[in-house]
Image 1 (cartoon, rainbow, N blue to C red):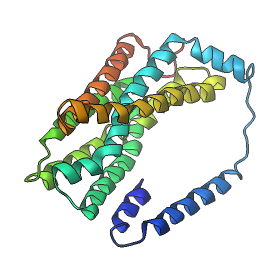
Image 2 (image 1 turned 90 degrees about the vertical axis):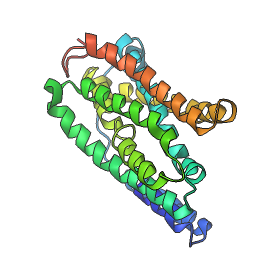
Image 3 (image 1 turned 60 degrees about the horizontal axis):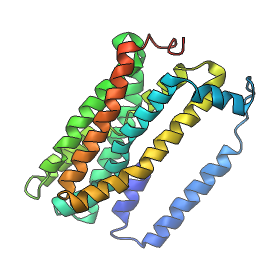
Length: 252
């Protein structure tokens, strides 16, 4: 994320084709490095049976769907932040790239910090920690329309920081919850199923945002619709909080 933000900053002075080739090289090197990983043997009834067991679990479904809807907030935040700041606050290329770097840096800190906090906070019930993160994110997303040209630097960078710490940081906690909801031999299938909903909702998120911007009042509508999506997903999380046992016993 930080490398990507740096590319946006460098694009103001360097040839973007060269930057893209550099990114492609990094991706290739990372892929080759992954080939050295040693596969871990697993136990279970096979891929089909494992996936079927996960799909039949109502609580896994509820969490995967709720998490996917919440992820629409992260998708729109990273997808439209720079365009929004350029349009609403009249920021230049290097300035909006710096704002993205702030968001990515705070996200990196938040992902590590929230993961550690969720180990101890609320008696180890990670799902409560996730709900707190998402509730805060709803508020910050709803405040995005406050970014204007006169206060763009202060409000825009402030919200980029806060949303980086919230909506862009919930994923590790969510994945830990998903793993702990099932038996160990189903962990991979559960995470994969969660990612199916995560990326499915991420596909719809920019379409909804763009439609809201074009038909319901500009960026203000887009951010409010996004906040509404995160709120809807958080309601599902709240239901799980009300009925769910402590961590490591979710599926029992």
